[in-house]
Each structure stands twice: as C-alpha cells, then as structure tokens.
Image 1 (cartoon, one colour):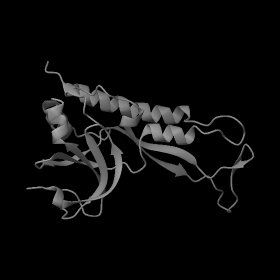
Image 2 (cartoon, one colour):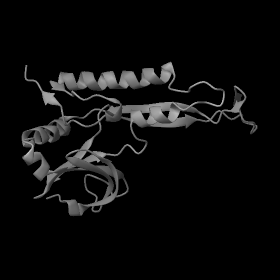
Image 3 (tube, helix red, strand yellow):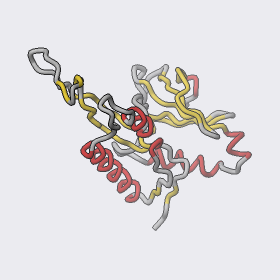
Image 4 (tube, helix red, strand yellow):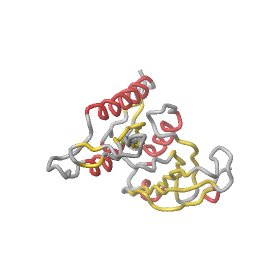
Length: 196
C-alpha cells in the first residue's frame, strides 16, 4: 500500500486554501520512476471536513484518475493517511500560462510590449480545445479553466547561423524563438461529472 513515506517532498511549489503542492520524487520506484520529479498535491482533511467538501475532493481524485489525455496533467498515484489526501501528479517544471505571459509580457528594448505570437496562441488553444473535448466526451466539466490552471512546456529555437554569427532582429540579438510544445489542464477541484 502506498504512503507518503514512499515519496520525498523537495520544495513547495504552490498553495491554496485546502492544499499544498510540492515538487517531489519517488523513493521506491514502481509506477513512478525514482529519477523523475513529480508534483505531490497534499489536501488537508481537517480543512475540507470543516468546510463540508469531502465529497468534492473525493470526486476530484476520482475524475482525475479516470483521465488519460496529453492535454490533462497525469495523475500517477493517489492515497491517503489520517491527516491528508495525496495526489501524485506529473510535474510541469516550466510553470503555468499565467507565469509564461508575465515573463513574455515585459517591455522590450525597442519600446513595444512583447507577448505571445498568434501561432503560439494557436498551439495552446488547439491543445486546450482537444483536452476540453476529451473531458466533455467523458461527461466531465472542468469549471475552472484559467491561466494558472493551464500548465505549459516550451523550448527555444536556436536561430544562430552555422558559422557562429548571431541572428539579429530589430537591432537585438535573436537567441531563439519561444516554441510552445505542450499546454495541459490541471486542478480538477471544481470539476463535475454529468451523467447523460
């Protein structure tokens, strides 16, 4: 039987009213390799009982375990002890869409504002629409899609010339263009399943 002793909590990466999310690692392997960093959501049972939310949390865990789609953060394991429910989730080390937009939304050297390009937004929206369509096909309504609940993975395209010269765009070195590789949903705390 799985317990929190099977995992190492490395650092706090998020906190809400009833839960904390830690970056962690498996100590024993099994369904979660020991080399992979993971996210561990720890939900306080006392707080959810005081607020009458036990059935909501149980529903969140059950719905998340049923999902298997690249547009939805993977639930790798779940268990509980006397004080907490735990969900072992895929980690998104590059953060969420809100954080990404804040970092690319800074004032550029040329005086204008930078941001995501139409092609980048198209990739994000295509992946999110596919994830929502998958959820709806299962009768699940997420009910909390917002920038901080969209996790992202990205890379930078290398635009240097083969001879070592740097590309220059608008008078500034162009070290690489942001390439969105994945956008996926997390946090099913407000999700509900509709039976047709």
